[in-house]
Image (cartoon, rainbow, N blue to C red; front, side):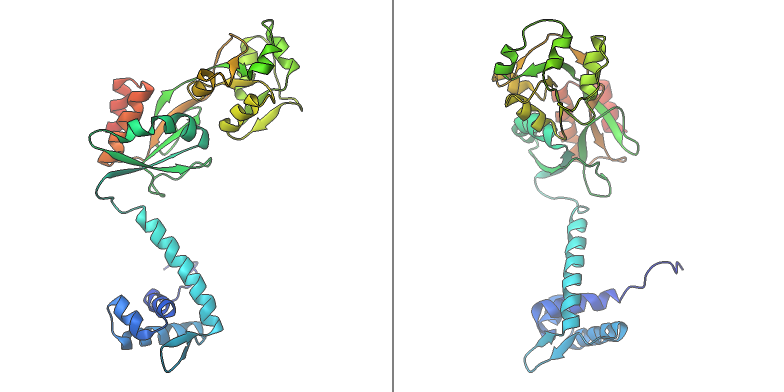
Length: 306
């Protein structure tokens, strides 16, 4: 027995207490739980004895919570809601194929969203449930089927396949581009540079031109590439186009190229999944994503089979 764990109150008693507190009646709680009125009463008495506090005031019609009971009801309600939310993620989904897919905001809005209808339509139809966040999710622990991330290699504890790489080049809004005529790469340093994360893209681009670039006070950093594009479009500096994320901004003329030099981004985009067998709906979405990204058939097959 592990004596390091904190003692827990009787869980059956907590369930009976929560139902009685929520419904205001032992009889209603008994009906909801499928047990007798006496069983609810005994469970509540057991919990009161364990806690050393009176939780209910028995009234002519029903029961009312004591101050201690009110505090406990608040906590048990939160705990049961958390357990219910976590448990739902483990339940095998029925009906239309629902796939939980996590990704960072920029990839979700700039690459996934324009392709969402195509990914969901087809035979069988799918529905994608987005989990959009910057942190690295625990795929298996959080019931997530697939993840698209930006990184430098396969992630430990997951199965990964590279979707695509990026050849980056400098871009700006049309007004700033007009003030940046063709010339040596050093001319770009006359303007603020906009970047995300650690400016690895700009470092790689200037290194390819024989220049040792380090971020300067006038340069701007944003945590998400959506904001990088917005900042560049509003004339706050030069940015790097990261195909295909910047494709729409360039196609519409919101941003334009200011230099023909390109460089391979040190990071790439990866499709990840938990180890073990994929659910059929998740496997089908993975096939559609890999086909859209141009993943080689052998690599796609290995990702699905592993």
